[in-house]
Each structure stands twice: as structure tokens, then as C-alpha cells.
Image 1 (cartoon, one colour):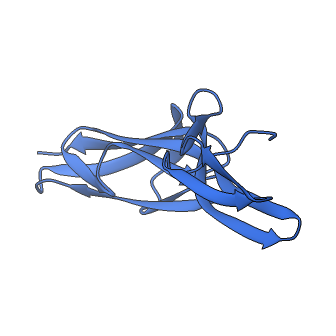
Image 2 (cartoon, one colour):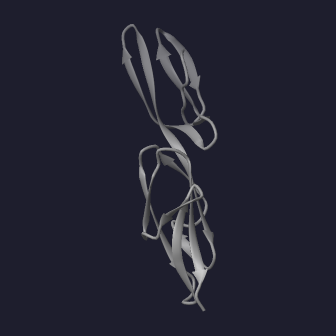
Image 3 (cartoon, rainbow, N blue to C red):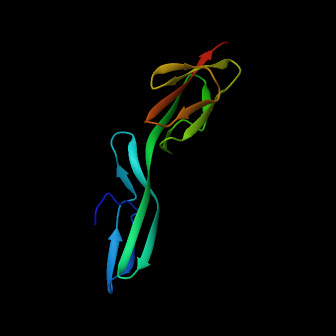
Length: 135
């Protein structure tokens, strides 16, 4: 077999030319910092004289959301694996009236105050919602 093949870590037994083979592969394969391949599905096709198993995996990038100051985000601050090319909308909200949303920083660069902000997952990203105290 040629790789990389990924699956959910479980084994799958298949009849191949009157014999039983067990295929066991990893669900997640690292593709470097903030990148991975994730098995989304598999398909098996049985036709004489053998069997073909196809694993379908997606390339994912890590989105890390954080907050500076008195506010929160939706989705909440943490890290998320997102399919490459997908768009993620993030909304910023202050905790109390004495704080207001000021701007977003994408990978350390001020990208403005559009709220919600849409991140296109073409690479790993860090998105920070920055709030300021207005008393």
C-alpha cells in the first residue's frame, strides 16, 4: 500500500482475493505547525479479482482566537481546526458597557473593526479581538 492513508484509528477487515487483511491507519496526520490531514471518510469497492479502499482526507489549518481586554468572542476564545479554504465568522462583544470593541488583529496585524470578522483559512491564523476601556 502507498500512503499517506488516514482513518479513524479503528481496524477494518476486508476480503481481498480469498484472504482477510486488516487495514489500520491514523485518523490525523500532522502536516507541520498548525496544519494537519484529517480523515473525513473511506470507501471500499469490491470487484474481482480484489478490493480497493479509498480514504478521503481534508487538509486543515489551525485557527486560534483570543481576546485582549473586557470582552468575549463567538465562537469562544480557543483553537479550532478548520478546513483549508473555509471561511469562519467571529463576532466580538464587550462584557459590560464600560468596555467597547476596538479592532481585530490577524496574525499580529490590525485588520480593522468590522464586526463580525471573516477569516479565510488559507493558512494557520491567530485572530485577536481587542477591547478598550471607556469608563
